[in-house]
Length: 165
Image (cartoon, rainbow, N blue to C red):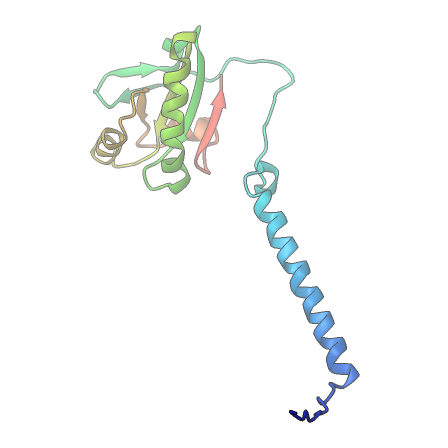
């Protein structure tokens, strides 16, 4: 018959157990905090974004810029349509990310009197904008604001910036 020997397992001091419990609670709280922040990552209020509305409607400042085909286009030429006026640049990562979604939006509502007018703030103009637009297959109007004059009128310092007109 086998014999068993009992060995006493040394116990931890009470302080070590308390520290382990506190550490475990902190780790669990941190995991919950990270999960909560991740769940709200796409909530605009978490990033300081806001929707600005105006008490009274007013006419958007008109402007004329050259498009990628060299044709001068004015904002007023889009009168009677819903226009998403977008300020962007090829060096702006969020601007690049939103282009495919804006193309889908443009194509989805084109027959309902909606268009997107994208104003590029790239100082190099068509030389850098055209290859980018061609690669993505963007079909909405792209206007070139190489001197940032229109961007300054609309306060487009941080890009991207859009106005629904």
